[in-house]
Length: 154
Image (cartoon, rainbow, N blue to C red; front, side, top):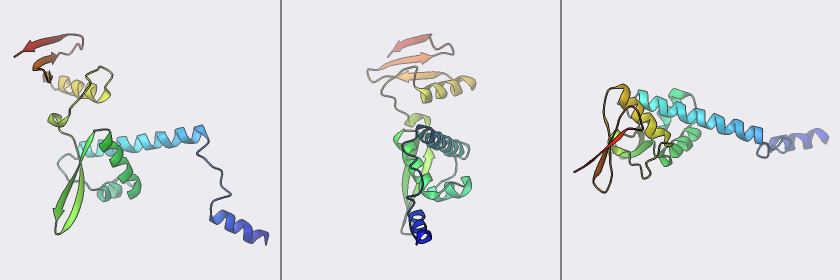
């Protein structure tokens, strides 16, 4: 009788310790989630010219499909990727891709925005100018030293 009851408890997972209340486990899972999000984003960035579905990402990165779908949704809500739906052979195919430069819209311009800072640094490494166009018609050029900005009104 004891073995049978232990089997039922272990089958339903009641013998396992609840890890949701442990801060170290929550930190571990959130760190793993962040690492996987970075892995997916880096993969999409390297393979820009290809269409990627959640299934193809899961297969190539060896991450479960449900996890990839959740992480793609997180990346989409963070505004880092675009999810598109295409109809091919009477099937709806959802693909993910990196946002292009002209698709980024920042409602708040601050130096604490890591994505904006990364884009500016990449542009400066390539020797390109960075221009910020505001809704009121003013334009700002951001030079390599971030403190120097030049305002040009057209």
